Length: 352
Image (tube, rainbow, N blue to C red; front, side, top):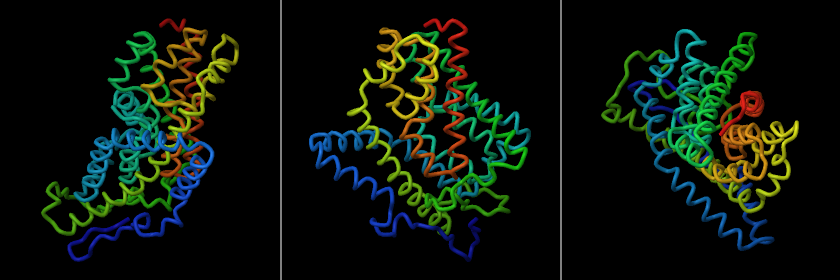
């Protein structure tokens, strides 16, 4: 925890900005993949680079806003207000987080800066996990496109599934923490600036116009740079991997596993959708087509909900932020919640 005083400049760790590239495992992985594709599939390299740059460009406004909010909260000591907003009954906070998450306009990667800021501000893990699970599954634009591409009933069911999965995740964390588990969820070795608050632990005043104080401007600049560096390299890797999935994972291969009506269609759809899911908008025509050739409504629901939460790009971002037990729980809750809600949807008739 960094203490902001008038005579002591804030201390920030900018290892991700200063350490040599050769020592950065994320950049090492990128270089290995680029070299491998350049050797075995040169045409795909240009396609993947273009896809990655385009995806980063499309996400840039959202990340710039999220980073500015997170860094501003620390520089102004407003992060104490964030924690206060989730104070009181953990049960109430968890329910509220699941409801808000289901209608928030964040994807599984775009929510990372906000989650980091909430955890660093001392918000309990239960409501954070509820929000984290529910948020990438549905948002207003996704609802409209899903209703148009698959059906209104399916869009409504997916919204309810997002809320239910958020509640399941939050309540599970509450039970685990009641018995002393999941203490200090953030990784100690991440250099995003998200693992520690830039505000004083005892601060009672919020400096909304923090830019008027040099020491707080310095904190804001360092925090923004550290978060941007951390997220930038991980999301570049995530989007590059997504481009490879688009190139090498066939929808026919997916359909061969989850396209028929059988007792294992729903769990198989969740297990296939979790790593191979592309993105929410690209999945709409894919799922619609799979349903036309025989995928059950329940399997379709499991595919889109598990994939939204636990896809490889999302998992990479989560892995970079939290400790291994929290990461494993995140994956388990995402897949198991998708299976349970899909079964309920299937038993209810699954009409689209």
